[in-house]
Image (tube, rainbow, N blue to C red; front, side):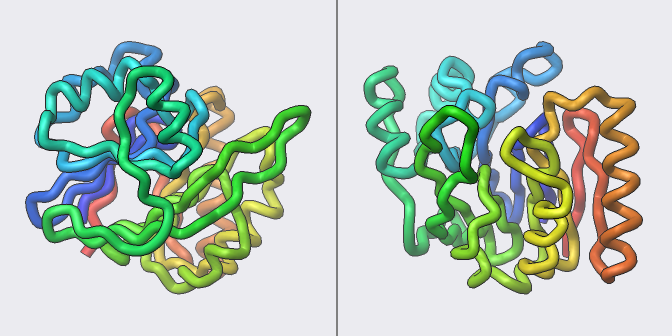
Length: 221
């Protein structure tokens, strides 16, 4: 499996000829280094929740137009909101689906609390029983995923504290962590935070793979 990060929380997962895109949000496309044309031969797009940093409506429409056989999957609340914005999606918020040869498991995972706002519905996805993408959540419902080999870990958010971030990762106990949700952090500061996390998790037997530049990727057995 190859996992490529395209800024913030956008991940392209490739395995056995299947290509799955997760959370292509506004940070991904803002600078122009990444465009919808970057994502060809995509089988499906998964959106964990309806926040702009996880779904860029215009970009997703363009990606789906470029990949007419691809299906957009999300939760029921997000699907209703997408429909009002002219974006067609299918509901997938619990259970297992198979995309090509890749099983995808949906796990209910309530969005973390937010200041002055009601959190949207959030769903985590386990891709190929290898990668857990939690969206904006450290919820205890994902403890059922303990031992998944790879965790996409949100490391910077208004709703997150560094100690809570580390505690969530230790609960899940992956072999590898890939940092996500860091697209609004300046690169010089981000490098320092990645180094700190790398050192911390190494002491606990977990590899932390720093992915900073658009298109940085990790190859996993």
